[in-house]
Length: 290
Image (tube, rainbow, N blue to C red; front, side, top):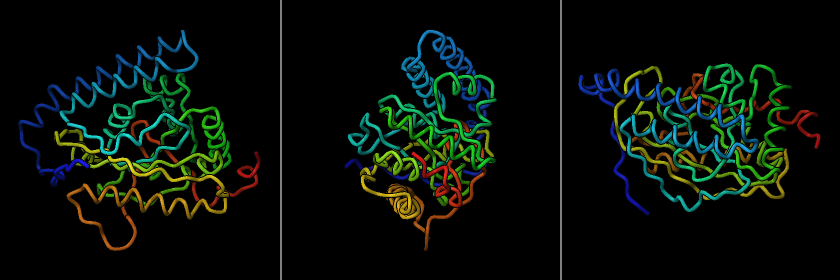
């Protein structure tokens, strides 16, 4: 396995040169690329139904965004990234997580995103037209219906991606997981693939508008089988998933693993941010129905 030097703490304040680069070059390039590729994807949606070209355009946007940020991305255990029905799961540290994910996963997939993002110009248009899954976390019944819809996507052979924390972590460390990924994987009887992002918090943390170019690592863990598991084991599987992703994160991070379970807080919003349902709704009658 490759050895990656862990990124150190983000300077505070950032050097003036990095702030000027963000304001004068990196930021404008990112926003122009987002508008351009979203418009291109919207045009492509008028001529296709399977979303293949829209996904390729999203990958091109992601590569352009990562390039504009100045980050260097390394994928560890990329051989575990297979185009199969599975739920791919990663911790959530930054707005840059989504570009890193789209530029790193070498196959078409769908994301589970907050319903509010579907109302955002360009981004929301692409989300809606490309067949991504919307979840209204303010409405438990709607959330359950959305996750059941995501299960149908898995049953149709399409991989899904989701951030299990429900938002970016303010501390830069993994936060508590919600149970949407386990719910979907068990319901569809497909594997859960744990992944950890390291370095994106130092690149562009929450509440910051300036970029600090650093090496970024996406490390992929062993898939977790769910064949034969039942909905009663959702919490158990969620705990195992949380432990595996935390272990992957701390293996390559400059941070030391804290005592006890992974902690942190989430802001509840994020660019193309995936969401989950709360633990008190996953075993409702609606969730049990085929």
